[in-house]
Structure formats: structure tokens, C-alpha cells
Length: 263
Length: 249
Image (tube, rainbow over all chains, first blue to last red; front, side, top):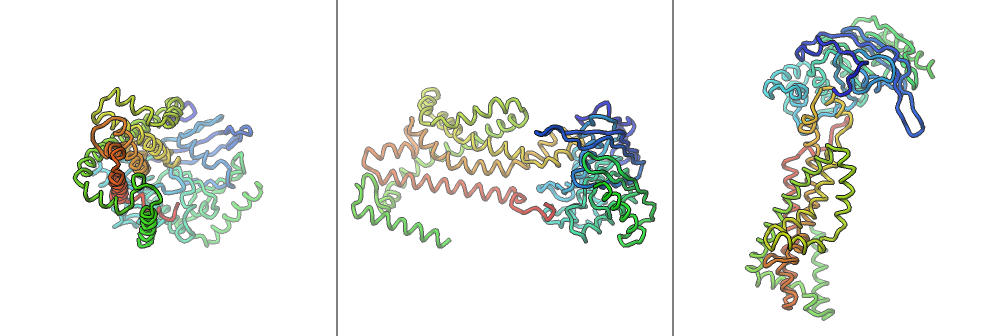
């Protein structure tokens, strides 16, 4: 990781535990600012953002487009450093919006990519990835090529790849934005299921308020650029949640109001 | 399939009529039937010289691919090398090969070496440019993912960039095929005692124009066959390069 610095504090214990067995840990951003130089001067993406995620907590971050949500995830993953403020996070793995499966590898090898990169032998990597396929309803598709899978299945393989990185923190960048409404609802259900079985600390960026309420333990509403935390909503609702539950609908309305107020 | 064939027949027919009507001297433009006759009558001569040229072309392309990939990797790895050497590479392509061909012959002799050097020089450019483009066509989000997986530069190259560059490289090799044949003819004409280029050079002052044209027909057929073989190889070896990505793109 080239982008490590004084501002990114990583507990040594988390770094040295073997992949797949790291305990979930906390993420904390304090007063983080980040600006990008452009031809018309510098543009602030984040301005004094503070945000935290407790171990095993799913924090859903919603905000208008261009509010610096992606910058936030890249800071957590150590892909960027803040101009001001501090970012504390154990090693995090990034899941991009598009599945970005390698078209020349089978679904199984795509899921096992993090293990292969960690120099686990191919046979061992496949042995560890295989059981997860059935859990996400992908049984029988281990040797399928990415183009043979539907969009929803590809996203599930991408999520398995994210899980198999064995990092305590998952940074999910609008993971279901590219899916149609029906597939997205199914994808949210399997994500909730997978996190129930294997809890991780998750920072989920989305522009879909409903998704934030269905998946998050807490919803953080960001302002338009430069992004600051405007509101925080606790989602103390039992799981599995449905989009039509009155409590979910009520929270969604509150989050939407907070978003509207920001404009 | 039928229409291009009809068009070719119509063109050949027009050519035949024009040549027979005595539009130009037969030593300047032989009729297609004369060329066909030469193809048959000189088949042993054509075959022997074709074997020489074919070896030059195939080896020349192989050298260009190896050198082009190596150079593309170097340019990909070093931004400063790229700034320094890339403009020179482009400039070098504007030097007509006929000017350097005699120099290469003077340096390397009349054997295979100068031919390979000339073909290699001509093919190097399309291979390097396409391979470099392929190495850099990797999605930036995929690079980010590889970085969060703490992949080394070599792992990113091996697992992501090289496979992604392969279809580009094969496209470059297909362009190289067409120019390699021209390169072989130029190289042989700059100094050689065999090969189809040499045969063409000899046939014209001997008023065997039909034989020269027959040699051109053989060269064209060879280029088309090589091009087709590369296309077939790509479909076989890189099937994923032809399948549309799923609906999430």
C-alpha cells in the first residue's frame, strides 16, 4: 500500500492476523478535508467530515451525486491521503460499483483473486472459495465465465471476491447501482444475509436512501460538495427488513428530508 | 460471400478486356489470364522463392512482437522513458525504409539478418503502440481494487494488465502482417539473391511482367492467410475478447 502515512493509523494486530480471521474493527474519520486541483482552481470534495463505524456496524452513507462519497471510500482504503484531519482504519477492501470481474477467469478464480494475490496456492485458493458459492446461490456456476452470468450473479461473485480478501473493513461503492430494481432487492437480501453470517465493519456508499435504510445500522447523510455529515439516523430495526415495512418507510422519509434540506 | 466474389470477377473481367484491347503494353500490365498462366508455369520458381520470403516475414514479425512487447512494458513502467523515447519512436516511423535498407545491408550483409531487421523495424511500431494501449486500457477502478488487495506491481501486471493487453497485441500483430510483406519485398530488393522481392526485381527488366505479378499474387495470398490465421488464433485463444460483457457494463 503506497498511500500509507501518518494520518492512516493501522493497528499492527489487524495487519498480522491471517486473512479471513481478522476481527472486525472500527473506522474513524475526524475532521477530514480533501480537495482536488482542477484547471479552474481547487475543488473541495470533503470539508471537515467526521464519521465513525463501530466494529461490525454497517454504516450507509447517502448524499447527492458528487458529494465526495467515492473520495471517502478511497480515504478509508488508504488509496488517498486527507489534506487535513485523520483517518483511522484497519485494512479495508474496496468493492467498486461495477463488478469488474476478469473476463478471462472463471467465476471461482475471480472470487479467489485476493487469495491468489496473497500468494495462496491456486488449488488451496479454490478450495476456500468454493463453499461460499452455494451460500450465495451460485452453486454450479463455479466454472462459468463472467459473460455467462447475469448482472446480479456477477455482482455476487464480486462480493465474494471482496469477502475473500479477509479484510475487517469493507468499503462498498454503490455496489448495486448498476442492477435493475428487482435484482437489486435480491442483492440487498443476500448482502444482509452474508453479513449476518460473517460480520464485518462496512462503509456502504449509496445514492439510494431506501437501500441505506434496508442495509444500514446507521445512515449518514452527506451535504452536497464539499461533503460534510448533515444528519445521522439510527436504524434500530430488526432484520431482515423489507422496503415496505412502515418503520423502513418512515426512516426513508426522514433521510430524504435531511437530503432535501441540504439543497 | 457471393457479392465480393462477383465484384472481384467484374474487376478482373474489366482488367482482362482493358489489357486485351491493348490499352497499355503487356510488359507494363499483363492480362489476368497471363498472370494465371505464369502462376502455373513458374510454380516451382515461385514456390522456392516464396519459402524464403515466408520465413523472413514470420521470423520478422516474431522479432517485432517480442521487441515491441518489451518496449511497451518499459514505456508502461517508466513515465520518464515514455516522455523521452515515445516521440522518437513516432519520428523514426517517418523515415522511409528504402533509405535505411541499404545501410542495414551494408552493416548486416546479404543474409537473413538485414531482412529481419527491416521487417522488424517496420512491424515494431504498430505492435508497440497497440500493446501499450492495451496495458493502459485497464479500468482505473480495477487498479484501485488491486491496490486494496495489496497486489504488487508485478501481480497487477500478470493478473490484470497482460491478459487485458493480449487482444490489443493481436490487433497490432494483424497490422504488422500487412506491412511485413511489403517490408520483405523492400528488404530483398535492397540486396538479395532469392525471395519473391528479388524475383520481382529480376522479372521486370527481363520483360517477364506476368511473373512479377504472379509473385505479387502469391504475396497477397500469403498475407491474407497470415491475417486469417491470427484472427482464428484470437478467437480460439481469447474467446472472452469477443463476448460482450454482461449487462452491468
